[in-house]
Image 1 (cartoon, rainbow, N blue to C red):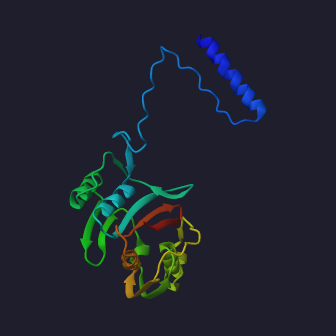
Image 2 (image 1 turned 90 degrees about the horizontal axis):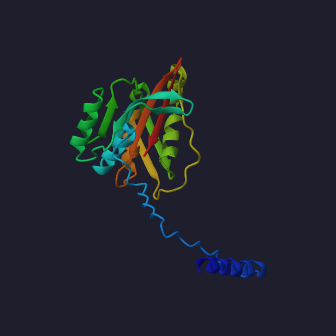
Image 3 (image 1 turned 180 degrees about the vertical axis):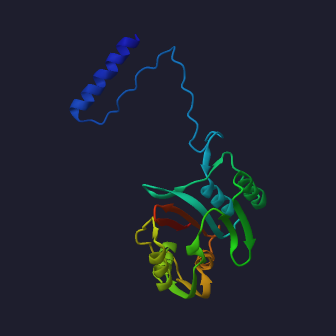
Amino acid sequence: MNKHLVLIKRYVFLVCLLAGIGCRNPAPEPAKDATPAKPTAPASQASPAGDMEAGAAMLRILNAAHRSGGIMLRGECGVLGVTESYRMKTPVIFEPLDKALQEVSARYQNIYWRESPASGVRVADSDIKARLLRLKLREFRVIEDREADAVMAALWRTPEVTAFLRRNHVHFSRHTGTPRKVISPPMIVEIKNATVADILDRIATGYRQDPPKVWVYRECDDKKETLVDVQMK
């Protein structure tokens, strides 16, 4: 009986196909002794076993605490530029802030952090030089109505920064496209006698988002030059 039913369904489908009528292909009859397939777990339910980039973990920690600030880490030079050096075993604790960052420092004792009203939360790697971040500018002023990359690009074009990059053989490993217009009114940053890190703090807090912006700085040494990657996230 089942065999005749299958033949009839195939005949009907073939007639519809030849006549140009929209017919769905009949599903094959399931075998009676077939074992039901187990449902696939959603991608978000990842196994606790594994790890994640420490920079990504620290960004989530600051986001969960609704804090702005900066993350400074030593990276590794590769084909794609500066890549992550540190990883955290999962599951990672993301809150409360103090406990979460203490877990990071316990895993990597060269990574420390502090918080202040002026700079927000600064997470720093004692193994990096970060001389660019300590460079002081006499004045920085910009009016920009695009995303953070455009504001930072204006910072990298200042005479003090371009001279520093050339003199110290420092290169950026990432080049971004033209940011979209997203700010109204435009971002206005005006600051004097401030370091590059201080200016990045000002840019991060100027976006007034929740969670606030966090800048992430990575650097690595490649032969006689230093590669840096700075992102506002």
